[in-house]
Length: 307
Image 1 (tube, rainbow, N blue to C red):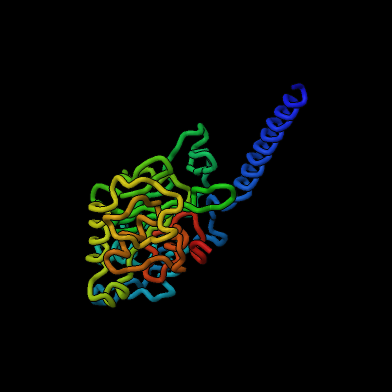
Image 2 (cartoon, rainbow, N blue to C red):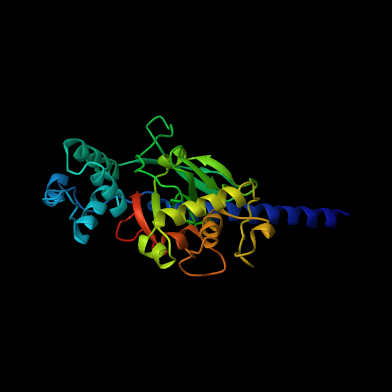
């Protein structure tokens, strides 16, 4: 009998040791990704009034070159759609416009303090905090559009920085549809939380990609959002959702996950935004889709949004 108890005790001890080692390895792997939480510009600020000195022609039309847009992205985190929205709404580089763009630039270059917290058994999430350890916002959104895609790189599990994604279903009221976390069904969410992530990517369907399908970017994106509202609310979370058949018919959809939800909404209106076409779609796959363009970034490298 004593031998049996010794063996049981040894087995329990071995399990505890293995469990402790596993936790230690997972913690180490997650800590190793810390330098990817928020990537700062490794180049100096430039004067925006100089970059925008020839933004308009004599007819009041925007005449920025591709190189101008690239420079503005590197300085403010704003892509061409956002720059055109801001400039086009005013018709000139007014002091108010310059102040608005300077604020984006200030936020883009500002240092941040990041707190990494456990949100699942093996999953961690990063948020921006102040010196009192309170969660704070790091940036402002540009003008949003229904169907816009939100991505962050702030979620990671055992060293894999998988991130999170969502689709905007109500731009005016800043509402998204999201598959949040294992154990929770997909649901509409308020976008405010996204401003406290130390990394952020806002993407939009390219106009030329939409035109190839005989529609406009705005119309197609709105249809994707409407599809998400109709078919993708209150769906159970599944880590491997879509692994066997990610294009299953809506009435047969039993589970989803954050990237699958966004991909599925667009796929069902004619756009496959999974960049590698693999069995499992991830936020990284969507971030690298050639059908999408950058509207805004924060805390990521403009040269490589998500390598």
